[in-house]
Image (cartoon, rainbow over all chains, first blue to last red; front, side, top):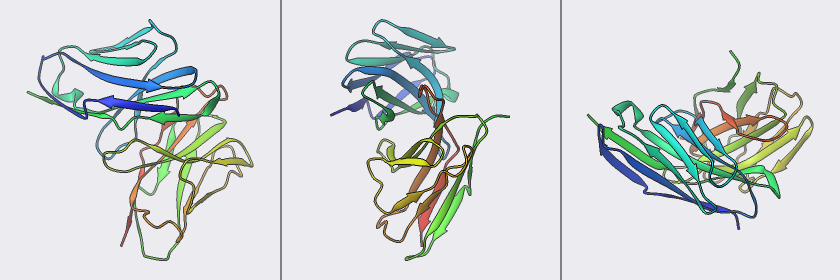
Length: 111
Length: 112
């Protein structure tokens, strides 16, 4: 069964303290892995798509990487405005009508 | 601006009532989706549609219904058969190749 597990559930960082969020997935043929940012009471905002192992994408302080079993979202020198819930989703080749979402990592960056 | 518009932002439903959530997109996307989000859980797929006049049940379709009469619109009806409807509902769309999905701002439904 296709599934996505994100860890940790919550992460508290001091401003400037770099860290990584993990997304482990089990899927029968990965078509794409997606990272989103979600602010409280808002819809998810698209960040990155990764398609194959070894691929990396960067945007400001965020960098997403992908292996055959997991993806990491690295946050370098975070600022308080990076506080949000980060969601990971996967799409399988055999069933690309569906996006399977993890339950997210809630990030809190303190000044 | 191109995007997905959900309305209303907040909705209150009495026991036994049906309510309809609106979702409109001007991205010219073929595929549209409805998800439900509960605290501490991932998004769960309710219904999806790949083309006009066609839609498929997702993982938690019981108690919900949809229609897709226009490419731009994909309304969701929460029926009285849905036993626990209080949740945050998200509409999304993606292009024909079904790459990344883009989301609306959500509707928070509360049963009173």
